[in-house]
Image (spheres, rainbow, N blue to C red):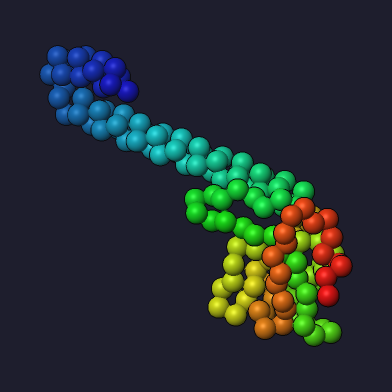
Length: 142
């Protein structure tokens, strides 16, 4: 980048075209900044994609995923407190642990790593029990 600006300045300023050289340098600088931002965004998106794939693999094998920028998921077994409850994107699988990153207001947001579905239930309708150890099944809980 600096070499292109230097080459441009040497050739155009020495020919007496200062305004053209200044405009070209600004264009080169703008292209360099935009390229650096695009590269940084690509690296950040790639890191987030790798973290998401690692979290999915860990949750599928019933392991708690690693934290990512302070966000820590937890595996929980879900038990409904009533016969029928409203579930966004349901039904809730009760035979395996689900991943949660906490609750928001009165909703519990759960992610099923096996199906890839995001589920939401009211916290008053379910009991969330932290899955301890390597659970292959949550169905034994009463």
